[in-house]
Image: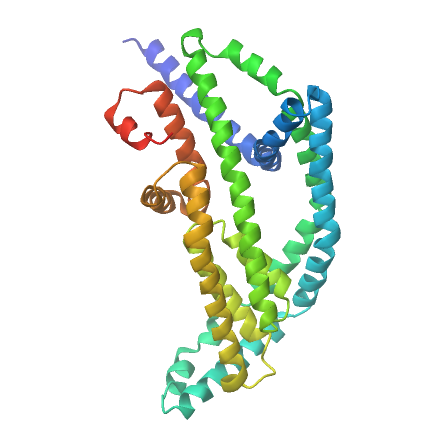
Length: 362
């Protein structure tokens, strides 16, 4: 091997590394566009059954069916904005007006009341709390900063929504064109398998995302009922936040319960700690746990087991592994990604014994 060949190999390797780095930098710079594409793809999967209804049942032509589908989607968004966004903004603004010192004072007051409560019950934890200096170690800046970032996100929501709707329109309208382009790219000997995988994946993920929206809506309604029953301030925002956290399997509901408990206690500081704050917080937690029992035994089995045809234990293990490997984001995308892998495996390796076992219900 000559020095010229070695030098060329080194140069090619360096060029490859630079190319990969530039590609990653480019993807990082256009991350908003990538998010728009992903959201549009999800909306396409969700609205595809409606599009097929217009085309097959009502005999609409493709363009007319797409227009009606988009009109319904826009009406849903407009209805959501008219009903909920002003309320969300007003409640978040009332929360974000709290400055860091006020929040820290509220937490300190809450700790003092908890301290007094334990002392009245002959539990000497005062010295322990003071020695640990827990409240002085906590950084409360993230609370107003987070709420203000939410407001900023809502203010730029319009541009993102317009972009997503525009992309979704062409995803629905030119679906056949995309498929024809894909057919030209993929090898002929794998064309049928790949197209079957795409069709089945589209069907399964449409069912999954529609079911997920229904599940989150049910959880949100039940959460807000619990919070309103016990007169918790800013119930709408708390219920919405906890419902969104429910997207994270297993961990999300636990985080949501903790968030709800803390915000309930902070919002009720004017009351008596023993006779008001503690009972209300415990009732809210109990209500949230009842909601989770309903969700775990009714909503989730229907969505995760039936919509993606996977055993609950299988779903739990996949979600757990994805969480260990990729964190919270891995847990969120684990089920759709695993379902897609199962469909592809069944198309390409139907005789494999492991594939037969995990795809027997597909």
